[in-house]
Image (cartoon, rainbow, N blue to C red):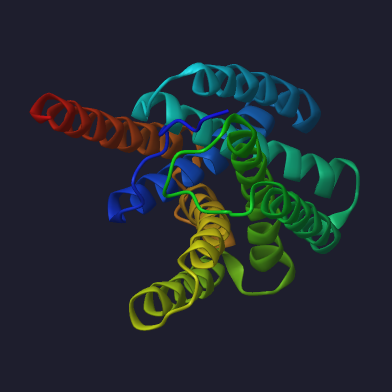
Amino acid sequence: MRGLNKLPHVTLVFWIMKIAATTLGETAGDLLSMTLAVGYAVSSAILLCFFVLALLGQLAARRYHPALYWSVILATSTAGTTISDFMDRSLGLGYAKGSALLVALLCAVLFVWRRTEGSLAVDRALTRRAELFYWSAILCSNTLGTALGDFLADDSGLGFAGSALVIASLLAVVVALTFMTRVSRVALFWVAFVLTRPFGATMGDVLTKSPQLGGLGLGTLGSSAVLFALLVGLVVRESLRLRASRTAT
């Protein structure tokens, strides 16, 4: 099947929106499962339904629609938060085992994608099969990000702010490698994509947790509202820019 160009250009704005969406996914997932006391299993089921509906819309689209694309990203992030918490806490796997399992799963998805399609590149149109691999990898990476972020914040002793600083430093290394070396841009994209999720997870904890736990104490509701407004504003900006570009051509 011929590929369709339904992916955004990977620019600085893309990464800002990715971090906003993943941070919102952390706070919104915690809002549903913890603040509203729905529970991890039920929250995961609800959010997976939202993910499937958003993904079906994305798969049916014929071109890139910012609101639709970022709805799927947000859905993978919120669902990833509750799935990770269900695995680590309800099933008792713990952060380390949960992270290791998700790393293996993500590597398996990327490996099969690479063997099947011949490339992991996301800067060109994807076939339907490659698009399914793409979203599977994103769901795995966003679930992994929550487990990894919680592992760094809780089990490593770094705390929320310390974990965010460590991941931000790793992202800075990825940026340096992008501009200063010939390291594969595809590999660096996926490294950055995985790292922005635990960065969002730890930043979400910084925003929501109490000052006694090293956070700012804004709560899940207030943090989610601010992040949602930020993401909506960025999506509107992207939609207007895209519309102007299509009109000009």
